[in-house]
Image (cartoon, rainbow, N blue to C red; front, side, top):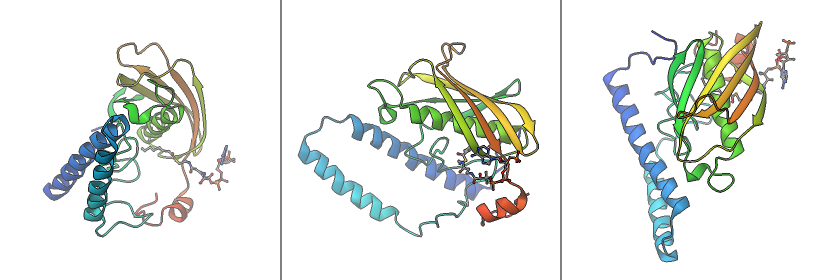
Length: 221
Ligand SMILES: CCCCCCCC(=O)SCCNC(=O)CCNC(=O)[C@H](O)C(C)(C)COP(=O)(O)OP(=O)(O)OC[C@H]1O[C@@H](n2cnc3c(N)ncnc32)[C@H](O)[C@@H]1OP(=O)(O)O
């Protein structure tokens, strides 16, 4: 089993994750519709009322700011509400960590108009988001989950929206708790044509640092 495979889930956990993902998918469709709509003002105001109703429906036992959701595996595992990979997040494309290819971690996703920077193209910050995530997974895959302490990007070509993307990352060097990581974004149709390239430094906090940063962690080691 790869370290990226989620551990087997109980039926209740599976059902909860399925329900979270169903809501996430519809919220993403709603966000995309909202940023593309040409509906008249009165329809927007009606939709705003409906959105307030939904917010009230969901504001039940909200989790604390630093609480790890019970449906997650942290660190190094499934994050249902991640703004990048989270099936339950309306912000996430969501990116899927699909394969580990020759030591590299590969993620795939398609950006929508909600992720737009220049018209028709992805926002540069969204590219950084995708790369940061997949580079983080590369550290986890290499056995040392960590936090980004440096991230440098080179934007070579614009990232087209509504086009399947391939994000790759690989740890190139390790020095103690520090990992140097290389990452790229390309389209799945032309994986050799690099659109965005990144170099990053990740740091794996020592157990005492991790305990201070993440008080709800059960096993900081
Ligand atoms: C699988 C899911 C993937 C998700 C990936 C998402 C990744 C993220 O987005 S993480 C969020 C963004 N990153 C952060 O918030 C990190 C903020 N930084 C920090 O909290 C701290 O710098 C922390 C905890 C990492 C290190 O703490 P600190 O007290 O600096 O530790 P310290 O022991 O002094 O430094 C560790 C090493 O890192 C170096 N370092 C620390 N910060 C930096 C920095 N900003 N730039 C360069 N080097 C740094 C130090 O020089 C030191 O190097 P060495 O061991 O060679 O002397």
